Amino acid sequence: MALPSSITTKNLSGRYTMNKALSDATAIDQMLGYQGIGWIKRKAIAIGTITLTVTHTTSPSGDENITIDNHLTGGIPGSREERPLDGEERGRSDMHFGKTLFYTKRVSVKDAEPLSGFLKGGKWTDDTVEAGLIETKIRADVGNGKAGWVEHHIWGVEEFNGERRFTRRISFEGAKKEKLEIVMYFDYLGA
Image (cartoon, rainbow, N blue to C red; front, side, top):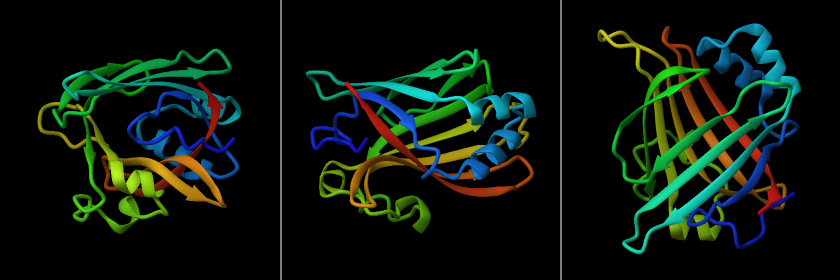
């Protein structure tokens, strides 16, 4: 289901599921493989359904936080992501990806200029251009100066096939310099 006009990058609260017909499942599977997720688990993820429950809050002082509860069918445990939109890098331990470092922040489309054309591309809605995009970068925390994988995301509301869609554009680089560009489109399931 398409997003109602009340859902913007200023308030992404709601439930979503990835639209497998519109998203690039092959590239997502490749990315998970480069991140060390085994074949059996990747196939279960491909067959199952991932539901995101997003809670987007703004404090009276203007501090934003996005909490995402990931629910997976097929008995695969989900996870919770706490993402303050302050640009500060933080560590996190995840049962699927191990130790990671990440930041999340709001950027204007103008400030996104240094980003690749792919990341800032898309047909962002007027309200997304006005409120800004959400940028997040996640990298494997392998320690000892070793290179790990890196995901660079831009999130926003995009006009796609005449419908408003929550979209994640991902530029991925693996530990061995593998490169992928992935667009994930989500269906809105309601509040």
